[in-house]
Image (cartoon, rainbow, N blue to C red; front, side, top):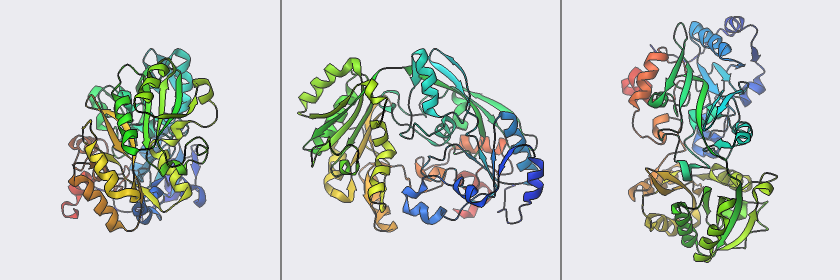
Length: 457
């Protein structure tokens, strides 16, 4: 069976079952905790602006999660899991009301071993790093929301980020080691997933299990220096980014390329960047600064900003001008701007990047992040778009795909419509087993909707 909208939710009965847990019923707070950064998308703004839960429960332990799961199953109430709410696609926005389960209180780093850590889902990435770096290790990759984002939210809703230029994406085998998951059966249970089984739940937006513990791999902790390299020509900056990403002997964590006029949106950095420049924002190990400097010379770049690792640990960090923070800074100046997410073809000459850069000009401002895909360094685009209409936005995305620039659509709240474009049978089969009533984050998984209502798509 599946769930119908909770128009007659018996909130009093549910609250009685949850006595002793931290509950939030204030409408203002509930509304705030029902949102994420879907506002980046004008399409999602229209679709999600009036969606909110009925009650927020803050869990402090796995036992709390089991209680909440059992109560929601008993009363057939939807449950939407929330971390820090730093996602961009409405992953934690409840479409059918019900309970928002806030896991941000589950913050414990349970243990750290060489190359691996066991953590609770509400632990912030920066807090995990602070502890692991004391042992010489650090998180392999993180979103630009590193200071605020929780590890559970990142694994449940993210795909990669700072560090992906070396380690690839979360979906690459070895980047998630194990998960503990609470089910939504009549008698909820705890299931441990290891190896490839973790991908039954990873990047499923909390639609088929509640993550209560994670084992994550770590990488060697380097002293990361920060640098901005300016170029008068965009394609030179892009080819510099490709060359740096391909330089196996230079240890790096971030290779971010921003076409002019994007740097003009970086208020705190504008004084360092020459007017009209296209820039590379880079994190490179201090021990590799000399060969990095040689590469800058080879491409006739201008090193206009540099911080040692010690300096970079204080104040502004280039991490927070990369990935989705680039869009955040642009929108802080012009809220009408939106963005794309694009995987460009594996082409060392960057021909498709060049074609689209000149074809669209300032309508689609080029922002590239380099990461490893299938063992090769490739650029992904988080281009900033001057939005006009939904139709024009769709036309731009169609045009990209017509030249093999694959769009991971950030303007949809349907799981499969974003990146996969196809049903993930593994996600569906696991949901059928652990969430038979369809209570977890309903309305987000196309496969489940199609199964329950075959004519809906």
